Amino acid sequence: MARVNNALVTWNDLALMGLTAKGTPPTGLAIANKAEIIAAYYVDEAASPFSTYTADRCPPYQTIISAATTTTTTTCNPTPNWVFQFYNCFDCTTRTVERDLNPCSATYLGYRVNLDYVGSTAPSNTGACNTSEQWVLLFGSYDCYGTCNKYYVETQNNPCAPGYGNTRQGGLTPGGTNSTFCGGCCGQSTAADWTIIFGSYVCSGCDKYYEEVDQNPCSATYNEVRRSSLVAEYNSTFCGGCCGQSTSADWTLLFGTYWCSGCDKYFVEVDLNSCSPTYNTYRYGPLAEANSSYCCTGTLTCFSLDYNIFYYDGCNGTSNQTAVYTITLRDQFGNPINATTDLTFTWSYEYANYEDYYYCESFGTAYRDAVVYAGTSSTTITFYTRINNYCCYGSYCDGTCYSTEYFENIISSPIPVCP
Image 1 (cartoon, rainbow, N blue to C red):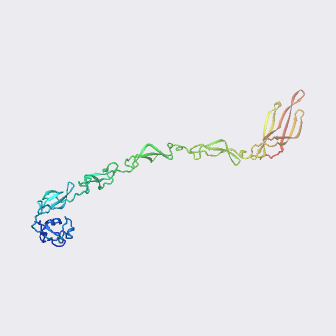
Image 2 (cartoon, rainbow, N blue to C red):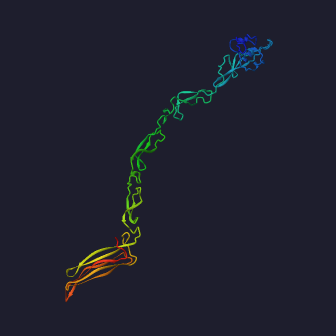
Image 3 (cartoon, rainbow, N blue to C red):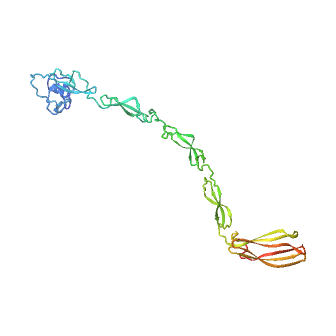
């Protein structure tokens, strides 16, 4: 028995509360709600808090107060008293379920659904239709959704919610990251597969390298070509230019061009090898002339003396002889140099004349000048060391006369002799 404060009451409890019944109330242990109590008993409907309850609320024991009864001789009203019981969901349509609680009504304790009478058996109390989406796994079904990850597929299986039967991406399957299930390069190696392309080369500097291509279609560099680390040929002519060519200098005389080092005159050489580090540069070549006036201005310094003997036939089978001296003006380098004025060199010499028929002879000392004229650098002077002539005695020549010049010496010169 639950007739204590705040306890909900059953039909058996209500029968013991001294309430006046409106007919024959139900019995049993079912808990009665406000609408059912009003339909079966006279209660004070205006009493608080009973008056604030909704029809389907089950009132606590102490809130149910008996009301004054009316005369029982009045005529019973046969109009059904339809009282809301619950909602029923059928074919995704929410229906209202009501029960007739008027004992005087022909449909007393019967039910109607959406105003249609359905008899004494009520539809199930499902509550209002649930229109919320209900996503559940569609077992055995997977999708990658444009990625390389393998996911479960979920389906919306609430027929009363929008999108019934639709599918969506579910959770990631165990081990589903980068799965081969997704096809293509998913789950495959993305490392480049660099393979030598024989017959294809590229140069780095003068070294010839093989090229290589990435043959892994799943690599980010697939089909790209690059220089390999494998050298096909070092310093190769394949690389053009001076690659593989001699870099030795080709020093060649540059005729007509000279350099000086001090007063020495040198040929100039040029490097004609375009692959040489010194290409088109110049350097000293062989010596062309030592103490050259090309390099230094010469000044008249001294003279040199050359001596030559010449022989030729004389009379009566004799031989004539002359001595020729050459005076050459020279600069400080020993090179010939022209005189700027006439220069006179005075010689002294001894002479003798002989005649073999009468055996006469004469002797003496004589002098002779040799002049180097302005604008010239040398001159010669001749001495007759043995000259044979015919001596005529009568009508024929049968004797020999000869003369000689000797002990020739320069006794006066404007410049000294060269050492």
